[in-house]
Length: 110
Image 1 (tube, rainbow, N blue to C red):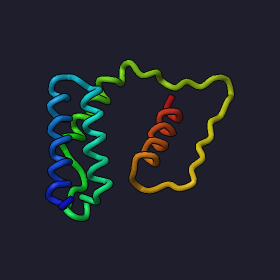
Image 2: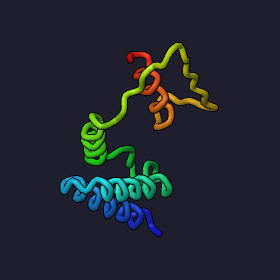
Image 3: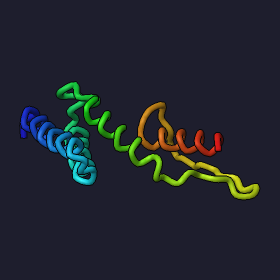
């Protein structure tokens, strides 16, 4: 499959995801956003098409996160228990590293 077709597949899922976000259909939004991200990652679109991020998808994800935030349980300390995070590798950017950083900050601030 050519790079143009791979980018087209990304754009197809991106478009479906953004339509679903506008409709408030968050489950289908997440499904298509995930597929778009997978197509971009698997086909190295960052290298072939300079596709490093997508501001519209990221904004929709931010809105979804904000909407879900009030319902999320906040972490609480119980007694004198301590929590330890163990990671084999951490990076300056990225999903797992960022998740660990955010949880650590949230627990520290609670």
